[in-house]
Image 1 (cartoon, rainbow, N blue to C red):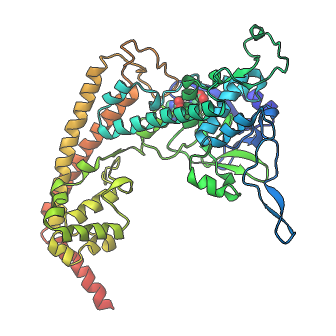
Image 2 (tube, rainbow, N blue to C red; image 1 turned 120 degrees about the horizontal axis):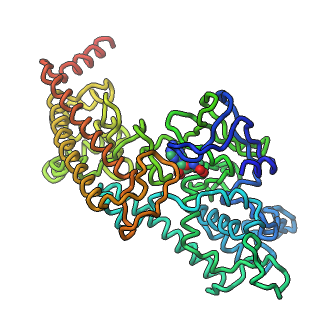
Image 3 (cartoon, helix red, strand yellow; image 1 turned 45 degrees about the horizontal axis):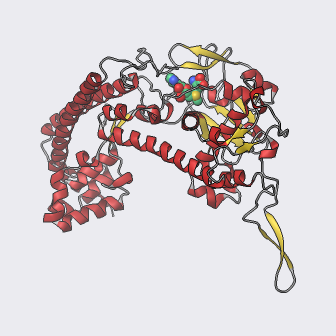
Length: 524
Ligand SMILES: C[S@@+](CC[C@H](N)C(=O)[O-])C[C@H]1O[C@@H](n2cnc3c(N)ncnc32)[C@H](O)[C@@H]1O
């Protein structure tokens, strides 16, 4: 693959080599020191596969029609206006280009990948595509039963959401193609051989004849594209500046495959910069981290929790410092405080207003109720602040004691602190029990039948060796559930420590905060 890249003008850092690592699977090793800010790879634009990229067969690309056209106005003056609907001239390619124009970015990239894969040796990406994994371990490919067995409702819901996103994306992909090709699955989409008498049996493995619609509408192939996109693409927003800006803002999904740059494995301890270099017209990956000779060169895929890594990339990392557990709103927010809505609507509304004022929320996506891997503070600041405000008494609200929290970073009051800690202790104990149950039933349901339990992290795992009706135990899921148990145990320890030190406090912290306020007033 590297040789193919170098022969085609991809600038590959000479110190780097492909290597099969025991723990992470195929990745990149360096035979000399790599310095901070060193360019790892530069890839010419023509090799990128994104939602605007060209197909490798010239005849598949729409003719270059200018986006500006001349018109004559009522006064007979000629003006140049935007042509918002440039369409390919050829009737033969009309359904092809109509479909391309109707696809969203992920469908468009999938279509491109499918075409290039079916083109085999006729594709400029043949060597690259040939060396990609045949299947992916991402959660969208899990069996429905397996997803249910994960147990934790937030995880189950998220995985189903991702899987359904892929399925509905495929359904609409199929619908667009069927409509444009008038439901004719035998319709020839790509005519490689202009000779109509072509002998269809003449194809060898890598040379092809014509490509029909039924080869393109193939769920397994689409699932492979989805895995390729989820686990191997880079962000791509260079077009944002140009006229497509409006269109692209509505679909923030735009990303690009960058051949060979997707051979680097992930580490949460490194920093990477990936940019399109306008001057050189190429995509570059630059490391912000130094690497020693004979070590694996990692890049960063982002600060992801293990659950996110498992969903999008199909692997997890040991003791991931970015790990966190999302909380269900129903568990995270005390019920009795939600009941306040009925008893004391004024206080309830006041609390919501305070939260809004400080950019916090108890509803929907805005809320970040997270358990963190941080011994000093295992609950996210947002979450703790929401709880503190919700537990405020009428008096505390009237005295605007939220200012203690948001201005001086102090507790609202000793009793408020106590109530929050009590709630967190009960929450942690019940979550710990839940996670122990999830793990037990996960293990029991999967009957010790391991899908990829090779007791190491990542790498290429054979996900097909499960002979228990398609269900098997996944190392990643057991690890995440076990790790969450440890995190909840850490929360209980933290709450106990806080309770101890709170007991030792003689004076109500509320007084301390007020003193601080008074001091400020005196200064004025
Ligand atoms: C962009 S590709 C990296 C190259 C890939 N290993 C290959 O052989 O083509 C991303 C995939 O590599 C694997 N991977 C990346 N980082 C890893 C890590 N730290 N541990 C285990 N597997 C990792 C996962 O399978 C992931 O989906």
